[in-house]
Image (cartoon, rainbow, N blue to C red; front, side, top):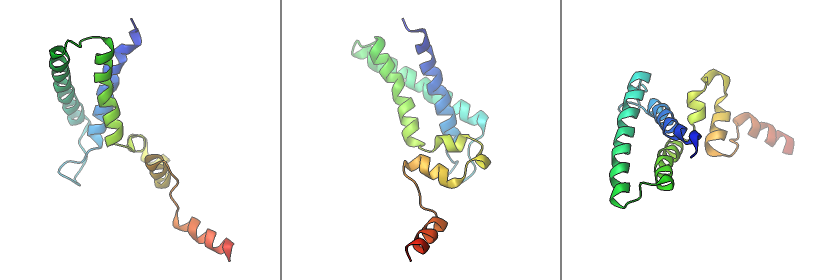
Length: 123
């Protein structure tokens, strides 16, 4: 029907792998390595496939739209769990921290130098 829909599980796997890579081991420790991140993502999505198959088949809903919605959930959840995914996965030296904060929160962060120059202009 739609050949590009084969990319939805692949996108879920890639985003899950990058999201797992950004998690910290044991709280504030080192991040997971790429190999561990891809293995954890594969296990998580294998459980997701099994759970989705069982749940959707229990309700007789193994059709196009329910399956597409089922695969859309991990994509949205990873984006919500890791809001600054673009900044973590990109080269960190090329993006200033304030830009990452702006992307993550959706609003501009005021830097100390900007507040000082703003107070000087008012005086």
